[in-house]
Amino acid sequence: MTLTWRCLFFVVALFAFLWVLPCPLSAGESDPHRVLFVSSYHPGFPTFFQQVNGLKSVFDGTRVLLDVEFMDSKRFPDQESLDRFYLSLSTKLSRIEPYDIVIVGDDNALLFALKYQQTLFADLPIVFLGVNNLDRAQEQNDNPQITGVVEAVSMQETLETITRLHPDVSRIVALVDETPSGQSDLKTFYRYKKDVAPVILSEISLGQYSFEAFAEQLRSLGDRDVVLLLSAYRDKDGQAMLFHKSLQLISENLSRPLYHLWSHGMGEGILGGKVISHFEQGRAAADIALNVLTGTPVREIPVLRESPNSYVFDYREMKRFGLHIADLPEESVVLHKPQTYYQKHKLLIWVVVCILAGYSTLLVIMWNSILSRKKAEKHLREIDRNKTEFINTVAHEFRTPLTSIQGFSEVLLNRDQLSDEEQREFVGYIHDRSVSLSALVNEILDVSRIEAGKGLPLTLSACPVTEVFDQVELYMKKQEGHRQFEVFLADGDTRLMVDKVKIRQVLENLLSNAVKFSEEESLIQVRGEAGDRSYRFSVIDQGVGMTLEQVKKVFDKFYRADTSGTAAEGVGLGMNVVKYIVENHGGKIWVKSALGVGTTVSFTLPIDRMNDAAA
Image 1 (cartoon, helix red, strand yellow):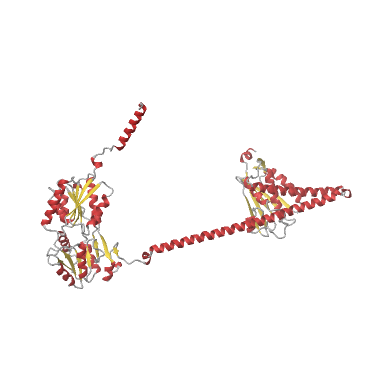
Image 2: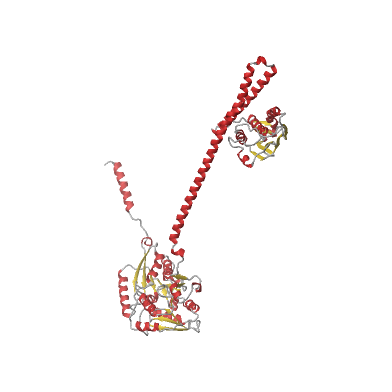
């Protein structure tokens, strides 16, 4: 192997080694945070997954590994069961990698954490959630390693809502058991005894009844009683029930309105209440835990006393007890509210709307297409008709002077019979007709060049207005005796930058039209005046005039005004060429006319300021 290949092999091998070599990371960057969640209950407890989902809503997307341990203290509250949980947890903690923080859910888990803080959880920060015992929760502000969020039930607001929605209520009966959380809520319940007077606060406690006797007590409640469910998991005989089974027992034996302070069970026979969201509890606790994990000392985070609670009601239970949505507190959430026709058939309605909109759009497009096609067809027919008229007119315009030329030529062939004066007159006629034919041919050629996109070349030069008008006066002299002309050119020395030949063509064309469409001996005026930047010419006649529709078409190709009583000579190209010449000079042209009054055609041409000032 040559030296070059050895070097290349070494470089490739080194690159491959560096590619697969893991980058060194600090422990804080490579290792996830380990979090232990100790639940007071078991996975089947209705609030558990709400709490976990709240935790995960914050932890998801972060480097947090969440483990869960269940005390199952609702079903097994005896000391023996608690001791077994302690032994199990202590064994696990001794065999696995240590946790960075502990989150405890509900009162029993907080009591457990406080009891074993210096043994199981030594030096570990602890965050609690869902704790009902406000005093115990508040005491943790003095504990440098514990903080959290209380489960502050909206007892006062719910009791006030009961008395407002049921004005005939005489007694509010709390359903409770001997669990720590239940007893804590019962103390809070009686704290508002004076606030709701004369309504009486009382209780039915499973600490005194079996579930069978408890059901009998529910059936015996009076017509003016309203019930508030606090906790009903274990009876006096130690028999335990899951929440949903307990709620089913209550609903089947209770004929009075049932209220609750937590979101679980809503829609299953509970009328309503201002309820705690366990999801929000979990989210708030996770926020605190994340702050601790990122370096905030626990002692700097006070216990959160406020719960994000909201009013929730079941429409089916409201209807059962004659309540209306309008009676509820503002911003209440109403479950099973009857849907409007739109809500029931929203998808179908939008499908139909989209189909109708699609059909409507298609119809509009088709209609516009048909209209555009008809308009195009009409335009093509008009062009075809104009071309036909143009050909006929051209033939006529050529035939008339050619007939005259032919006739006068034949007479001149027998000139021996004519005097010199007659011969000169006939030759003059032939010359005039030849000039007319030449002008017609030039007009057609001009339009042809414009249509082909070649345009009409301009030979621009600076000249005064009077010079532009000199040759036009010759045309007017030829018409003397047939028409009266009046010329007034103000500022005649104003210099224009124009093609003199083309502008004379414009003026002669306008004068020719004025002659054609006006009576013998009528007055035709030519006026001119200078503006700031342009010079305006106007040709004014007292002829037959035009309608507004005719004025709109006057610059169209092949258009010849259909005016009765006039000799409408020409092929309808002159004004189109005139407009092109004026606009090609940078000017503007317009027509004002009134039927039976006359027509004024005005156009502007730019002033050559530089040469005008020099002159």
